Image 1 (tube, rainbow, N blue to C red):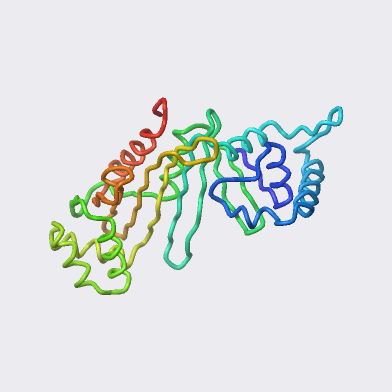
Image 2 (cartoon, helix red, strand yellow; image 1 turned 120 degrees about the horizontal axis):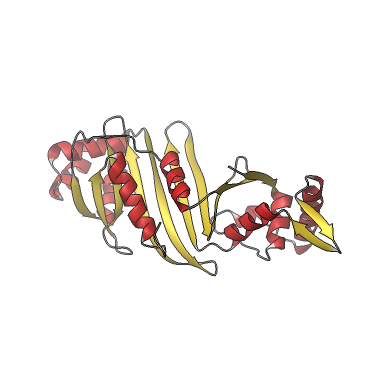
Length: 265
């Protein structure tokens, strides 16, 4: 996997090269100094640094950025589809991953430190989807329980709060009143309370750096079961909550992504 790790100045130089002041998803205020003079100073520092690394050369007074890096910069600046993945690992905290697609280029952007930007090329959308499954994996091949219910998003968020706070009876009763079997309600509440892994995936269709459509999913699991939550109808505050195996999880991710892509992967 081809990758580049850039510092703030180098990232600013790259943004200048593709004529943008915005990278969707990341903290642009941290990247971009308020003062125009400071922005220009850092960008020139970045140009010098990229030259020293052999990632930029000058021909006839024109700055020419390394071809691979330039294609990746264009993809993150002007994506057709952006995917924002959060991974919550107990005891570690939240990690963030950004995927940008501008056909035929797919790029993963992460921040190893607050002052570093890692750009990694993903060969195609299929590999990008596999990468999401690596970041937020479901490995169960069989379900210990099977459940699928539709629930108002506001109610589910309240159940989640109760479960996290240890108000198990309130959470389980609310789920059972919404159609969950008693055993399933107990398992979901315990999974939310003591997860081994969880996170969210937001697929966003983008036009001129504006989100025009999206699909949101969340996953949480423990050592017994994995649960997937997604909007029953895109844009409406109603969730499908279901147990999933690795195959069902992969299918749900593919369907969500394909609903935003033309042609499908």
